[in-house]
Image (cartoon, rainbow, N blue to C red):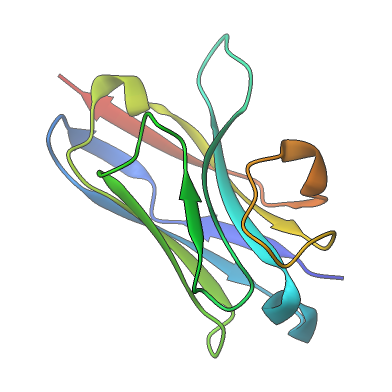
Length: 125
């Protein structure tokens, strides 16, 4: 069973950058698509970015396209989310997730069966 642990969240001013990391246990991580989702207070959880099993294909929500970059290092069992030009509306708890259902990058939340505990990102104006 793959376990996921996020880190790297914090408080940053608008326009700043943060890099989130998601460390995964288990060898099967390398065959899973991985994604980042976020949930702001009072809102539903939403898709942010996804990457395929080998890191050659990525997919982004329109709201973060051009500002966020997802990447993975299978040798380190880690997925990253580089967040640049942060906006106040990016404030949320960010979750890392793994999809055993497909190796392809996908924004379909229901395909992600394994979730981390989340890390808070707060962007101040």
